[in-house]
Length: 600
Image 1: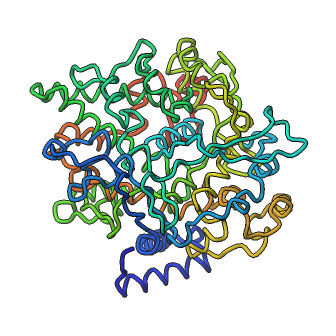
Image 2: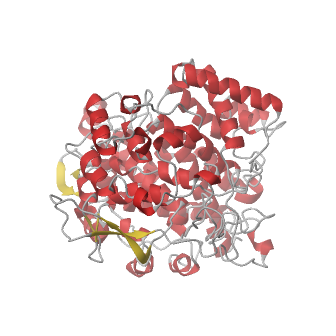
Image 3: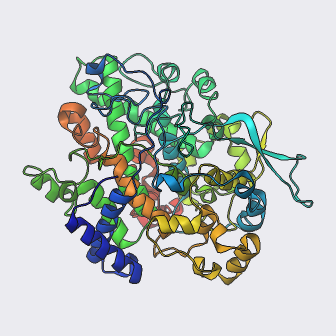
């Protein structure tokens, strides 16, 4: 944890007091920006904790370090050249809570209240509550990105047995939930630690893979390109390799749209680079296109997706400042000749900053990204030509085993248009997808993801709601009415938990009133303030090596000139009428019949 200078401590204290007694959302925009900046500095100083490294927690050192200076590695090694294993596959998750607060509760307390009861009584979707400022691509996008960032895996050893109430319609006699695998070289004296099966870096590993077998199978071996079949999907032999991972079982049409789109984008980037640099090898084209494509995805998440889901004027400005600097892209380009300050010019191209703590994603960051209510249960598919209904499916009909059928029935333009026209669910209580509470997996197992979400946060020692707020220097709830402004929900919380200190983190986050324009809670936002910045500023390919010499001048220009809108229209140009006049591609799109009528 970094030591703060006296002026920084004073500024952080002052900003915290203003936030506590007024609230940053109620301030004028630039005053709110100043308060958020001081809050971020406080979080960077007080809420980054390294869990160390065990002897078995990462791959061996690679002697070919020179080959990794200008390319991302499959396993995430050598992003940091001074600590080559930092952030690699098999590295421990860090923490945002002090380590002495991350011991899980004893097993009997850990199961209280029953996760299945929480699922049934507080999370079950009685009627779909839409997030009307977003489209369903936003729901698919965050799952697409989460599959890049982290995966714990599960183990069959000693599963959790969740008791069932007498009236529970669960189709099996008992509910068993697999545990999170323990750290293979855990420290006996400290709290449990867990390792990631993916890299911790923002590196596009959901597309490119985190192991050599998958990564090589996906490549054509010519021109740096990736293999796509006639449907625009990875060939079936590649899918069979991918299906061996647990994450692959979560694949569905929403993810397939984005995988197809950004695999096409990779290949287009390769062709663009090859035209400018005919001497580049297959490997060089692949590596450089991956750098460029990943940076485009990070930019989209920062300046498109995040402002869509936290649409408060202050946070929209803040997210653009993270990428472009406080004064915008044009001014930053001029000022960059004399400074690389991240606040002035944006994080891309600024010096790498670890805040004196080795980089990793954190268990608390994983916990606040549990956003399954975004996913609808029912989908209407429409023609991108005239908005007519061409199909209707429930969520199971879009699952992994049906993706190829849906792609053979509908074009990617129709699929993307349908997601752009639909709303996702709101992140609230009583809005968890019904089909995810009784999810049948391809292997025949049945899961209640809501129960799993609740239990996972407890199992990994993430503090419950009130302690989580204390950890972030926020005022804890003194009673259930302090958590929510919905009196019915307050009574339901009291009936399930009894004691306000027992409220689960995820439940509290869903119950909270949200700031203006926000799709998720202000409590969760505090972790995003810290970690969304950290993912960029710790990564040399977004900082010191975000430059034309590494990306090539053409690749560097590609990142600067592209966005979600340009990617969509490059590969699906017929979507232009639906996006016409839509400020953010993750906001609801226009019906094409409206667009066509306006054009006349």
